[in-house]
Image (cartoon, rainbow, N blue to C red):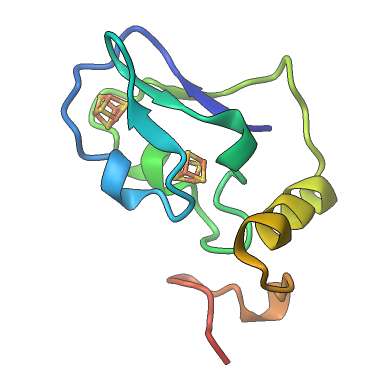
Length: 97
Ligand code: SF4
Ligand code: SF4
């Protein structure tokens, strides 16, 4: 499932540079997430980087648009051109090996 940002967002700017897929952008009033680019960080990190860093916990999973792990993996491959290699997904960034 892609994530979305609620109206509790305080426009602190810290999440935007953390997204490995450039899915976060400044919207008209608050920051927003482009669902087509959000893989829940699958392929890059074990944890959703925007959720980890948000100081007000206003980034939630969009349960109205469920995506399976395999769908998120396919989205990662489509966005990056890289094959998904779960064995390389470590605590930090995906291994380039
Ligand atoms: S979960 Fe990951 S990919 Fe999705 S918006 Fe947050 S940082 Fe970007
Ligand atoms: S980190 Fe949270 S509060 Fe800050 S801009 Fe992103 S969504 Fe808004």
